[in-house]
Image 1: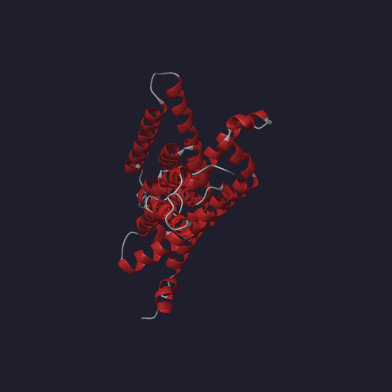
Image 2: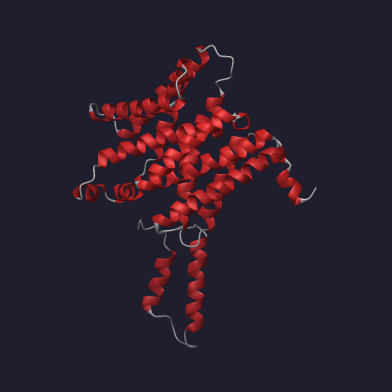
Length: 318
């Protein structure tokens, strides 16, 4: 079988074509949002909101309302409950997040177990990428378009909020309102990704692309390009791998993202575990080759080489 056949055969099925389009849309919008979540340090909050929307989605299904409505309501409810527990007790924020999101997630599981339905609601938990209907895909497109447009229109304000909320407040922006906006977008994005990978794996799509881009560049504007590009590549690679290997499609997509992150973590030129050491050795060899024969390296050169070999975090420059 030729490479062209390997690529075109899955697309001959309508469900695979919709699955590919759904995965690309979900991956790109999740990757865009993940850049801000990684910078702000909201990885755990992303996990909390993505799981807390489950009862909202189930209740929306029961009442015949749009999934997005239930997801947004329970997303904000989760944030409000986390803040209330944190501010009115001795419990710290990380513990409050764990308590609230696990309780709401359990509520969603209970609602699924007692809801009479002709359809299997477990696809909300584990995803049902190959079963996306045209109506589902239309909803995903609308929600993804809303999130993407808002992120692009408000990117400067949200970026300033991520780097320096104090300065954002000083120039007249409202950090609380911007934080609420991000949380609302997070809830909508969770609904977009539900169809692809389910509640359990949504957090991976919301964190891994941004973390991968963070290791590859020091500029936020480049992160907004690298993260969606990497995520889209993993979406295509993961879906095709799941087709030919007969594996779970959503899980394979996330596994592809995790594999790319592992490679970047090890071999990224400036911030990779192995890559930065190789780069430091290459610089040392170039200095040695440029130095006159018989001369010893200066103390400054030795200090530079030693500093280059030390772990360094990426500078957050917008």
